[in-house]
Image (cartoon, rainbow, N blue to C red):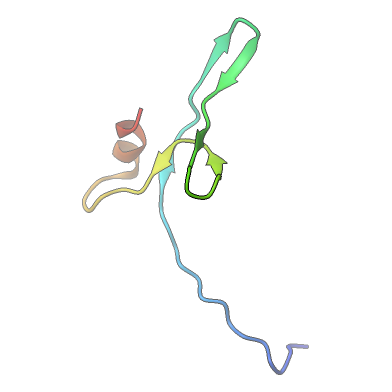
Length: 63
């Protein structure tokens, strides 16, 4: 049963492309992660496509 005072949360759809960059190092698998200084969030390298740019081109452009 829905709540009488429930609010809808705005949803924004974001599209990004990226990949997993790795290598077999001397002590096993090594993976690249990137950190954002502004908020301390860590994640895989990725980016948002520019107008007219495909997702595959975007994923490859940052590597």
